[in-house]
Length: 152
Picture 1 (tube, helix red, strand yellow):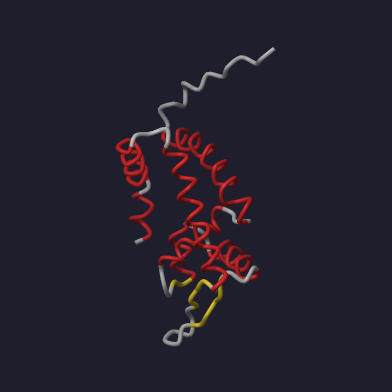
Picture 2 (cartoon, helix red, strand yellow; picture 1 turned 180 degrees about the vertical axis):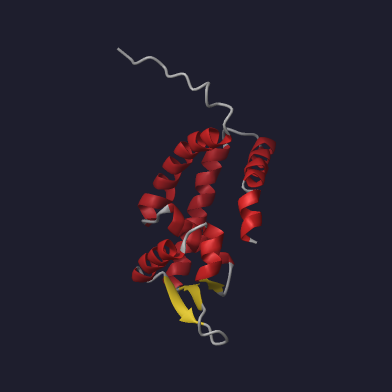
């Protein structure tokens, strides 16, 4: 006997609920395409992608970009550093600042992860027309604009 379907109608008007529901399928896709094969958590993947496209990034810059507090980011960076994927280098001009940089193996893994993410996204896009996908991304980016504006 199958359990009765649960009525979700009381939450369908909530952006957070819709995002959370969409996140279930994207989390599964991430785990299969990147998380398990490359042994990366979503925050580690995000950090590697930011480092791949940004030189001379400080821990403060990364914390703001990822909405992480300093202690949590330190743990993430330490895990990646233990794997030989990133280094911390003191700034020559400001001894208080540390640059977080990809190592050669880190750059290789970041490029593999980026390729895997493009394939993963292609599978997710199949449910949408090109226009719908562009609109979905635009609307989600707009929904997150308040957070992004606050970090600038």
